[in-house]
Length: 177
Image 1 (cartoon, rainbow, N blue to C red):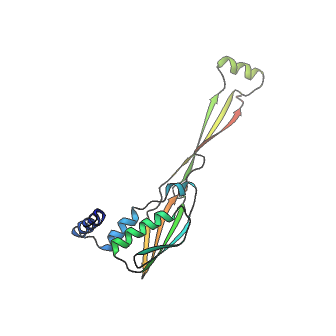
Image 2: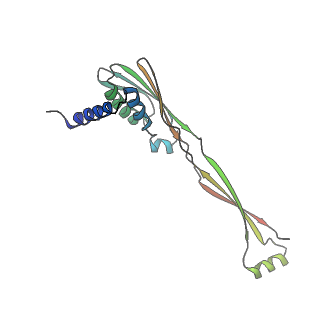
Image 3: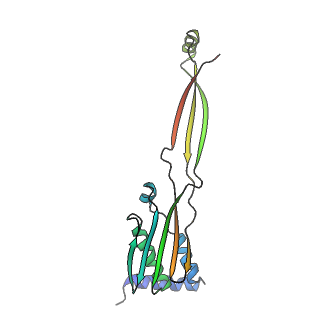
């Protein structure tokens, strides 16, 4: 009896071949669909994961523990898809800050009501305050990429640097003349 997963994979591979995708195109689409591990991205974990594939067994050589499961799962799907024999995989997990910007907005706010402002001016105190707001906006990470050099496959998976403080304000009192 053939396992359901094997039937599913075989039907997926035959469907891809009907649409005319080469194995390299299938691998490219598979790798582009891989996204950085959200917990590792938030913890700002990055580094290289090295996996060795020999005789239908995957061995993790080195790498940060938070990133290893994604690399292992991706390697297993690539080996199955490409039908590779013995190969070495290196995953480069990189956090980028491309597209992350800080937006500055300033506005003036009057203190109290009209009567309170008259009293404040009479006492020589400030009747207005300036509020400067800083807002961090996150951009998108570049797409994942790969290079094949013989039996060595290098894969770059990009994540984005998250804003630690997304919004903050600074109050500055200003005297109205």
